[in-house]
Structures are given as structure tokens and as C-alpha cells.
Length: 207
Image 1 (cartoon, rainbow, N blue to C red):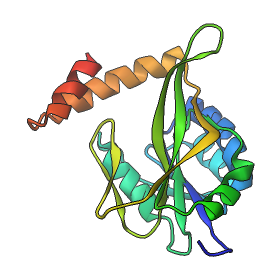
Image 2 (cartoon, rainbow, N blue to C red):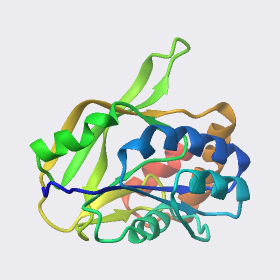
Image 3 (tube, one colour):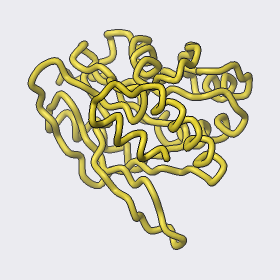
């Protein structure tokens, strides 16, 4: 990795005042450690746009079409090739200890970097659902998002992956957002039944 390595942060966000508040909390944890921020807004909302601009983000717009992979691929396409890597997240996330990120990446070069995602918590704030998630990938055309719902990154060649320990992504949602997501995810799952076993899993999970 070259000494002047540049990392971009990319996210898709919906257009709502609630999303704007969540985005503000997210960017407060990532902006100080990124070389560029690229936010794609999927519905019109001035508050979301103002929050993104407050953090110096490059703002783009994508008309929501019930396909997360399409929206994320569009978002990633906004990142110029001058950025070596892309880190991604959602508006209702936060990240910890990113001050060490570049030092770790320069020491252990890889095509993709994985962090542990603390996704759900009990009433005491202790994580109950934790899983590894690919969070940072090379910005060289290797990776493409696949899947209209519960999308994931797909590589077009063999890749080296490095697990970053002690650096976490946290899911900071609320009851209202969970209910909205459940309705949306079921709608998308019903519309994307291709026969792939994952489609049946997504549908069952939606119900």
C-alpha cells in the first residue's frame, strides 16, 4: 500500500428527518478518519442533504427502486479512482477506534478488511448478535454488490482478507426503524423470488 493511501467512506441513505439525525451520529464517528465521504440519497430530503454537506460529503442522488445492490453499486461508482479503498456503512451505524485504521492497513495489506458488527443488544446494552462483516474493499473494480435485499460484496478474483480486531461497527437502530425495515424487506423479498435458496431464506426472514 502506498504511503499516501486514501480511504473513502460511502453510504446510501433514505430521505427522512430521522435518517438525517442518524447520519449525523454516523459521520461524527467516521469523518475524522476518512479522506473523502460519498453519500447517495435515495429520496429527496433537505435535512439529510445538509447533514451530509456539513461533513464535507460528496452528495449524489439515486431513485429508490427496492434494490439495495443497485443503490450501493451506484454509490460506490461515485468514488473516484484516486481513492485506494472504500469503507461503507449505514446511517444507523457507528464505528469505534478508527484512528488506528490506516496504520493497521499499511502493516497488513489486503484486498478486503473485515470488522465485527455488533448488530443487536440486550436491555443492558450488551451485544447479543455479533458477526464478521466485510467493511473495506479495494477501489479497483474487484468488488460488486449483489442481491436486492441482504446484499453482499462479490469479488471477481481471488482476494486476500484481513480481520481487524478491536475495531467495531455498531448497529444503533430504534423500534420505529425496525418496523419500517421489516415492511420494506418483506416487500423486496416477495418481488425477488428467483429460485435461489437465499430468496426463500430472505422471504422467511421477512415474515
